[in-house]
Image (cartoon, rainbow over all chains, first blue to last red; front, side, top):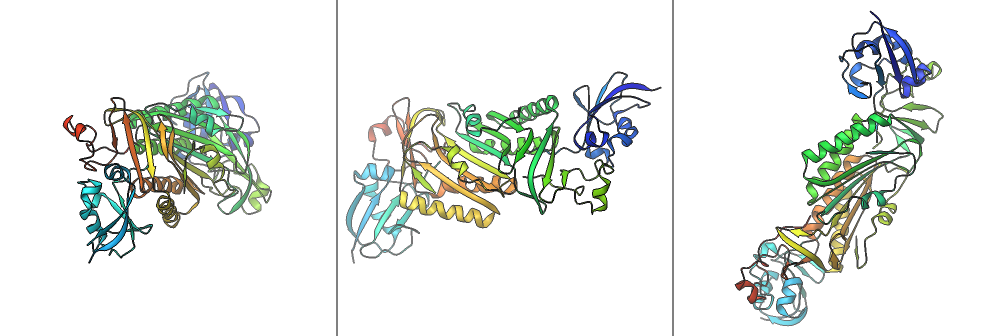
Length: 81
Length: 81
Length: 160
Length: 160
């Protein structure tokens, strides 16, 4: 069953998607599924382990379950400092 | 044979001697001898290894030979910072 | 933890950490330098997701406090376009003795660099640009550059 | 390496280390704190033999440059009477990456504290005073205090 979620893209992901945020309907069980199913949007070949994810403004794991109405933030590899 | 040297005292040594500098005549072969022979002036019971010595404004070892006319600086244990 | 749109003022920030019990203060500053991995850098752009950067930064500072007996600690990170020589990040720590201040300052900057949702885009003298640390991010985004030798999508190391 | 009779200005000193190749700046400050080994400290007095302190300080900075690939390094130490909260010593190091700046800054302050001809006298709230690190220095200098329990001639550790 598809879930209606909001996805936010950052940095290179945002540049590739051409938008910072969009509403999508996906058959995703986990955050990792969202990343995989949206490869055509964020365009990244990075392994999951290089990237991070947050759900509803909380840092999450790639195997965190996704619920209808969630906002999923897809973070490319970070580089602070 | 005695050597005529100038001795300079610092910090606690100076406070004990009551002077920062004095001319002395000592039968001292090394800097260590100067320290030992002037115990009644600097008043210190510190082992030599805790203290430092300079001769004519160069850091020296306690076994550095003393020459007539040298200026010997006796340094109590240091505590910078 | 704070994200700043204007120049970081290390002197003012350090003064906020003072206290009569503090005997040591260690401060780290990350400055924009003119070179990375052999390419001349013109300027940098930091993109930050502020809500989580602040939350995660506070968490890191809390971890530092739990790990080391320090007195005060703070971190400020710049956002937006920065020129060579500008301060991108400041970390300051005070403690009674210097061991803890050095260790905690190092811990905070190390964690900030790998955990905060902050991305850095380098603009090079040769006209290229690229997101640091992002080897295969959005590989299809700029096909004309891929043809030109992938110079902007290679693995890049952190600036400082 | 410089000895200063007036307040150390970390902000001004740090600006002297800037350069386009610098990606990291680590600064250490030693502050006068209000307590040492359980005794309340009122103020401190630093006595310095400047000619050799400067010479030895320059040597330490040279050793740091030989040991670590750093860009700039400097150290300033205060002399005379200092109040709680004042900055007694400042060490600043810049380098391309942060590893070297942290390591060299730590190396310099560690060496400065044990090698420079600098002595520190603490003045306590209870009226006593004592030269730090000088357990048996001039033991006969203050016999009235020896009788009162040797509180001012015990082994003392370095402030920060």
